[in-house]
Image 1 (tube, one colour):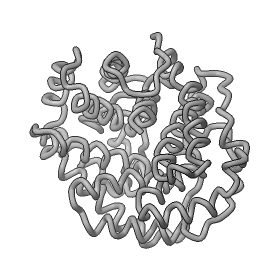
Image 2 (tube, rainbow, N blue to C red):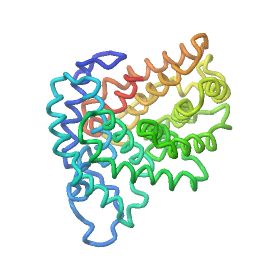
Image 3 (tube, rainbow, N blue to C red):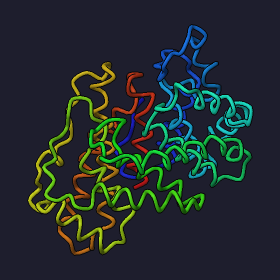
Length: 336
């Protein structure tokens, strides 16, 4: 699939992203389970364990594949694939199938299931469905409330943040969960996310940005900044950011300005680095918007976003190891 050089979401690109997602959200195999077995009876096909989210290689990628489709359907309601997306949602996003997902979540062995990345993406999907005039949101609501409660139970006892550039990153999870809390007016979750983000990150300064690691798809440094951008008032964020990354005008730390090199896109872990480039583009763009117009860091952040977007966008399709998820991060970057 040939992807044009663009900096914003276009109808052509949206349709291509939708076609990619429609091609994988119900593709059952290969599939990587996140499962703790309690007995032989737990060994079942993914489509039985997960009545909705059994495609896209793994559960969380399937969840944000549905988010991608829901977002595109709202943003581009006249695209050619709109009817196909609606039919998919009518078939899959039902109370009965959501109850099957909830049953898996309630197993005693599923306490740590998809924490925190999958939790956050399920809430992002629920937030997006809430913006549609359709029954899909109500069908998913019990599952969303269960994951929101997991955040409420977990965050008070999470003494330390997780700063890795993979699924365990807590800043990224807070950022996504915060969007859900705002959309559905869950004030308790909003307050808890605000308190946790401040507790974990507000005293950080002069970040060294030791990244990327070999399978990062998130920037631990920029995800933290984007998390605080989403919870702090503008003036407070600008003050914090000027201390957190004080040398942006000199393009330092240098690692944050150099797109990652991907040596083998058929290797699922190495292919994560295409996602790193796209997620950095998203963060740089979002952060730049929060900076003052006369702040020299703003222009540099936007330039860094463009460089990373250019490095990642052409590799959204090509090999299934990236194709089952990269369009999600491309859409985040393009919308930012």
